Image 1 (cartoon, rainbow, N blue to C red):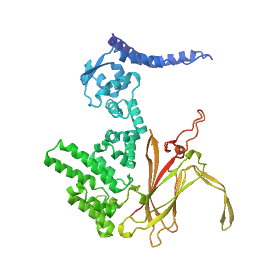
Image 2 (image 1 turned 45 degrees about the vertical axis):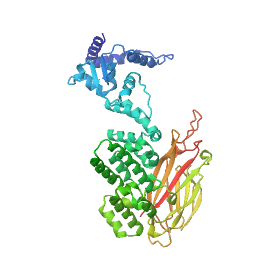
Image 3 (image 1 turned 60 degrees about the horizontal axis):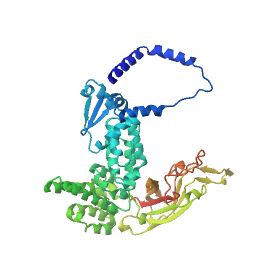
Image 4 (image 1 turned 30 degrees about the horizontal axis):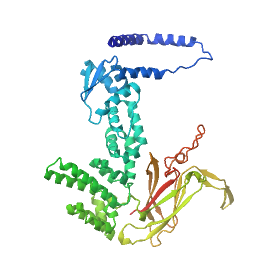
Length: 510
């Protein structure tokens, strides 16, 4: 009966196409003749129509095709499948596909997708589906496979808004791997940034061991990686290698296992910046079981670190010249250890008046190499989270006095002042500055934004102003007049979501 109905509808559609221009004119004419009365209303009964369509699936009425997944049958309707999925449309409507002539089609799905296929198919009829950090990846995988564009967008939007939860529950690395392979660049970049800026948090989860080698090595080459210090990163990579060793033991012979594990050690430890470890930390590494096992490799890497700290410039230049990305070994990352960073917090943020500032004074090392001594430089940090106000003033110039009107900048500004550059330095002091801004998502506090810049300070140029650290409206959202609600910025943390929290990182740039 349904097939006869569909054939009748197809013939009707063909006749309508043939008379398209005529019907369009007639339709326009009849529309213009319909009187518009003041009491006319627009009737929306779409929910009832959707319920009728959903009933077709729920009660398995009038189905004309059966999808089989892992031995389970799912009665369905070609019309709904083709309207929802480009892939089903080609598969079921193109004569060159054998499935177009079949009433029973077997689909091969991954073990992760099999339990969710029923919900996936129900979405075609209802537009409803339950998404969580646990199931969003297999749902997205099905949506990608069958090119269900609206569901793809829903999954990616969910992932964008729940990155922190994925990190806590150990699925974020898998999100990164999948979206990178499937070309979802926006969410891939979001995952990469979260991992770079919160790698210690991610490394504590079992999912960290799922990092593919090439993706992990690419990450290790990044200088905006936020970590306590380089030794902490080394420990994280030890855990990753232990995970790989446990996995490979069951898959390879002993000889293959030892050879493969050595290749992994060399690949992930070569980008580690041993010169950024202190001589004491380098000495501690000699006691590590991993270092003892691969002594020849690690002694060579640690020797590069000791050459840097001993002032052997020829050896340093040789490494920079001969190794791929050798210069990166001598560039600090965004280390949040106390010797080169300090925390700045503004509590009761909503009570802070406009244009007011908060100030932080701290010291950081002037040199990274041990031979240069343990000298420090003092910094003054002023943060303007609610804009900058320049009062009216008078400027004295050669031909008289000029009145300068007051001026307001709607910007989140950080002003950094070098109180006293080292007096014995003839060149500018070149430093790497990082501003790490914390955020709160689903109750998880994390670094949500990182700004990195290289700058030179000297006797004449001691102040650096960084504007637009955050979009002004995101940190200071306007009150919603309609609902009389004060929106909460995602960059405010604390129990009451009323604290602005920043880490200021300043390291010498060699």
